[in-house]
Length: 224
Length: 132
Image 1 (tube, rainbow over the protein chains, first blue to last red):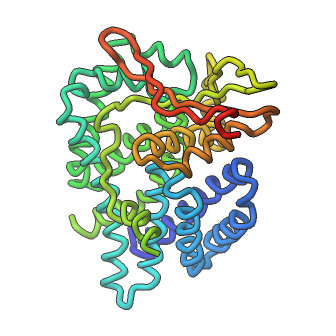
Image 2 (image 1 turned 120 degrees about the vertical axis):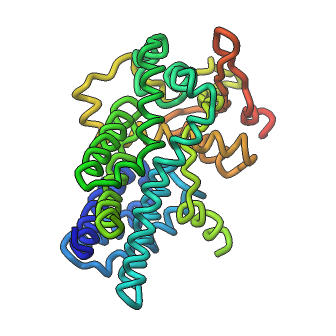
């Protein structure tokens, strides 16, 4: 994938993800509607090709951190800030080399988000025994219904589900060996985020992680 | 500015240690005081018994209530881990929306203990009499 194409795809996906977050926030935080209107306007400008709007999204991202004294939506907010800042750095880069470095950093962080997450789970005996995933269903705040808590009793689901997640995450760099392997890996990862969105209501993670995929697809073509 | 940098740096250099361990999980509960007497403790944002597959897919696009509930979890962790009075005040304000009377909140952390679940109250806001 060409660098300019990948950056443009990331901008479009970021704009859509931030617009989705902002529309939800419109009904959650009525007092913030003035700022959210600015954020939606920046998304619209970015969507229609006004790449300089990325600087506005960076500034509004800092406002977001200030308003909620940190992330409102945990890792999804952190990834939103990371994508926004990297795309702003691409725009601000003095030479194509530094623009590629900024975009490559985003691809690298996506890779690390899977690898580190997989490694820390593999290092935990509770995850290897399937107990951790059982606990997620049993008593964590995430299952979207009481009915889903029943999955905690399904040993097959919690044991093999945990191993599937850990292995796909931990070996994710192997998907970089071939473009088609990377497509398969990203589809698997997107399926993982989709299941998290359905089972645990983590919908914002799904959209913002998708926005990082062009960076890794481009990075794979650049490196391999 | 320093505060913003302190909040921004974990986003620019993330640790990505999602679900390293499943920690005790907070539940926000509230009770309403009327005429100097407290009502029963009740969960804030109770989850439904069942969510259909169609609803799950719809929430992929529109899920504000759930994300607001997850924010209460984040705030609860800030109260207990950082002693944040700002987070406690925000939980109280959000738990009081739409209720008449004085609202009191508590944070109950649920964890696995042996074969069952244990509940421990790690924070409780002041009773109305105490606040005058």
